Amino acid sequence: MLFFTRGVVAAGWDVRAPRLRRESVEAITLSLLEPSVLKSVCEHGLPFLGALPFGDVEESLLVKLGGKWPEQVLLWPVRVNGETAVLLYGEAASAADLRAVRDQVARAVVCAEHTLERVGVR
Image (cartoon, rainbow, N blue to C red; front, side):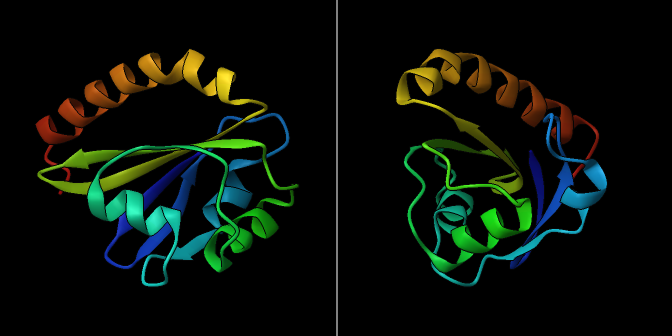
């Protein structure tokens, strides 16, 4: 799932998952003012891989997704001109599953960052 970040809000943008529809994800907005792992990833520009903390923003996300609390998550910022423009969110059954995709996600994010900079996003 992708979130487009604008100021103090992360807004659902797109999704590729069997149980989610793009229209549902586009209706999701999450505050980046309240303490959360999403806020931390956006502000510091560092990816997060691990167990999703039990916070209000995280709970709000999962309620809006209509799912159960995931075993592991990946939150990866796509940065343009030093700011997080897009936030990539994914769920996994285990830490090993996250480790298995980490390098591919990192390469994809670098490509996305270069593309977004080239087309003048932010």
